[in-house]
Length: 320
Image (cartoon, rainbow, N blue to C red; front, side):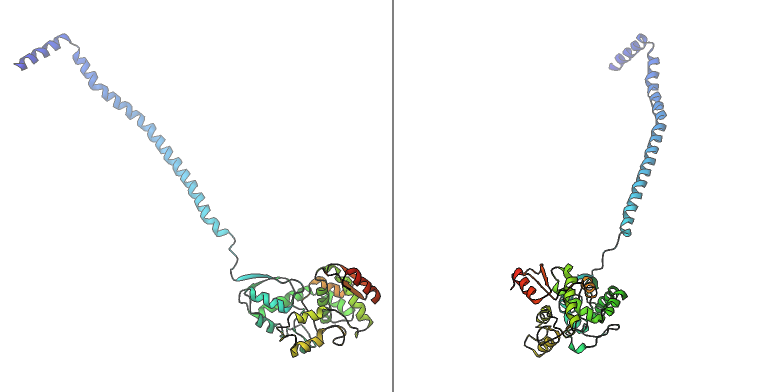
């Protein structure tokens, strides 16, 4: 019964709205038109996507290129210094005794083997009185800054010093020594005394040199009168067996330039002088000074031609 009622309603619906069939196709075809429109926008979207992908690829390429540069750069940097190399500076006026201690502290070689090597002959260096010297090569180990290997062969170490000395002591310097009537070995000995006397003011070295040259001109048998020749031995007395040892007493007669011990130059150099002191030894100032002294600071120098003037200078300096 209900089905008959529903059928009657449907018939009435068809009679009242004869255009219903036209509406139904619109409702059916409308989605088709919408789908067609979406298909027409797919191509531009795909193109944009391709462009984005291309740009991204190019950007990645540039980034990758930068990464390659960053990887390559470290291989072009300067490699680090070897860890087995040390730099050691030896001040002007250092003795072989001091040098040995510094080399051992720096890990280059032991001081004992260095002292032994410094007492061994070297080709090209002529020394006529080796038995009188505390160290055979004192004066020839040129003070400078050097690079050494850790645990380097001691003979290689000595060679570095000697090579530098041979470079610094030019034929001109050797000729000036000869023109003054001295061997280069004697001039190195004088230069070492000048170096120690002028430790606090090396600019005074040519005036100090003139004092010693004037004394030596008067006579090679004149007492040179320099306290620093005594302190050379005193400062390494332990190495020599003590200040009351036979070796110390023997060397005192060869180095100490006062009284009965030694006239003229000592047996050898008392340190390793720098180039200023060496130049002053062969180029003394032109003076008539026979005496000089310094105040307690060692920086103010007083010169005199006579002994009485020298005594008066001592009072001025506050040391007499």
